[in-house]
Length: 311
Image 1 (cartoon, helix red, strand yellow):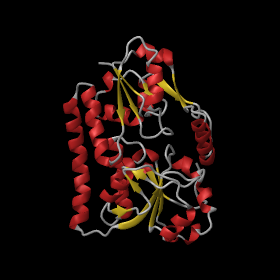
Image 2 (cartoon, rainbow, N blue to C red):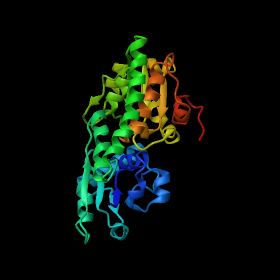
Image 3 (spheres, rainbow, N blue to C red):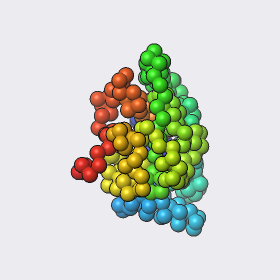
Image 4 (cartoon, rainbow, N blue to C red):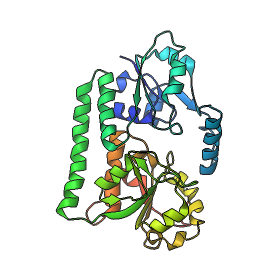
């Protein structure tokens, strides 16, 4: 069995389940370890350019209007890999290559692989995707072992919240800065498991542009900023866009120093393990009296400090 993963989340789960010996190609967005070990087959027109949030949004909109994709396949590398199965997705055209673009590349191959499109909408769907990946690789039992450990971690958070009768925290998680996007799909479920509620979110649906006035009226007690594809340092480069918004300093989250910046992969990269990491981090943010951010995740989240951050 030979597989290619055109989806960072699938690549992460394959490594988590110790099935990477079956992997023969990845994307430029996959983990650094996988990119070192496996050929990079999928590239993006934006990967070598340092665009702002607004520019990325405009470039994508322009490409979509012209019926073009931001992503392309290194056809010779794909031919050499000769995979039996390719993992792709149909959740977001911006984040990764989609099935339509993948199908066009696959149509040119002498050997036709199976295309497995992962399309999770909620957190349970993401867990089901792990089973889907392992089953396609002929290793279904590996997924059940993997998920059992992740479910134990979630249960520990939920049991602690219940035992302490922890109140729900009214929060907001931003998936993009300019324009502002709320959070959708599985993220509202992560927030709920961690002891919070985001009334601006769109559970099991797409994130959407959210007007600043609407956000300001909601006035969350805790704000988490985790733009898709951005780590902490990259987000800080554009935090001034939020600071410049009228009323930013009047938000209770800002006044009470309850604004946090986090790496995107704990939220918008839907591998089961990274989303559970996100739940544990959110639980510590929402209820620091009950939880601490695990030591191995402390570098992936920081409290916002205005004008005090240097890369």
